[in-house]
Image 1: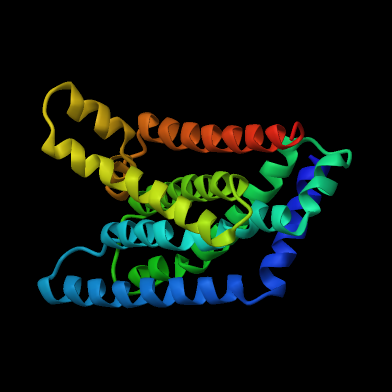
Image 2 (image 1 turned 30 degrees about the horizontal axis):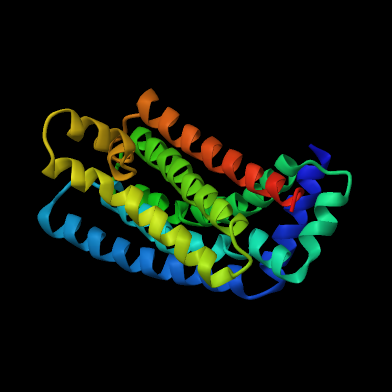
Length: 240
């Protein structure tokens, strides 16, 4: 665990010593805040009960766009600069490297989520929202964002070009996101398969305030699979 902590701390320092984390968080929250302002106005105009259901969906979709640039450098830059070989020959396991990088990216995600608590506070100040669905929504946002980050870690492990890593991650994220839409156009068993594989389908219950074990298992399994694949990619480099 100590190696993981050291690697994660190093990556967090790299995030915040450069403008990438500040810019990403600022732009993300600006867009999310504007959408929140529009939704609050709509709820007030039509007398709808205060809710963050639409906001959670928007924020999760935004991570589809923001996760790739935040993860593209994690392993790709190490490969380009030749420091990955030094890291892999040090007394640290491949999975510790992957987990350290992943936890650093999730820390940025978690910081953004914590800042976004202001939306819940605003609704609480001007209404009486149900806190249970909000808690479920934030849990879903953390799991969905973590899954997108894990895909970015794998993409970064596959290439030394950061732009290529970002594009690979974005395409993979987008494919998983639209699988549910493809399932709606299919029929029979194909619909069930696509819905189970689709990313968006597994977020809906969280936004409704429902914590379904099937959805939690989906995101945890997706994260584990992506990180396992990234670890195997690093292991393969030892034999080149």
